[in-house]
Length: 114
Length: 110
Image 1 (tube, rainbow over the protein chains, first blue to last red):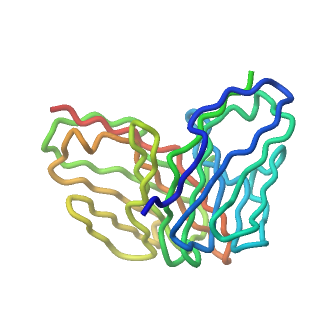
Image 2: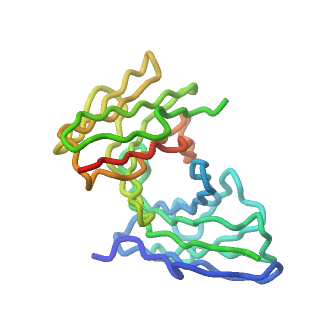
């Protein structure tokens, strides 16, 4: 049981480049989330999805896009990378909703934009 | 002022000590989560609380809804408990948003 798998673990991007952070879960969880964690700050919600084909913005969506074509995958796309997007990104999933269950987190992607 | 405040920010203890980490919040919530972030960065969900108390092994989490306060206790602490402990609250009203505290960094020395 792999849980939530994120790739890559580390990436350095140049300003203006684009990339996709991959997230996959094998638990048939319907809810999936992308968070970013900046040094000394709490996690902030970027986007979330309540099921395949449905996505919604979180607190800090600017500069990002997501898609959820299947239950298993929830990729996060960065267009025109900026230094402000240097952060650690976590994908998470839960069954139904966090009102009933806890989260399962991926191991994170450390992104540096130079 | 942050909606979720944790104290202390940093905590150093000797192996075997009883640990308490506090979380206060200023908003209406439907649930509160305690998470553990390992030194390597991985995050594990420890507890989800909406009332009362939960226990898992040496970890105990309590919540007082009226006082808007939660505590995480670790009994007989061990160096492997060294991690950042994060409090997060689920806002009332069916929102998917979790508001996170900044975390408490715990170091347990042998």
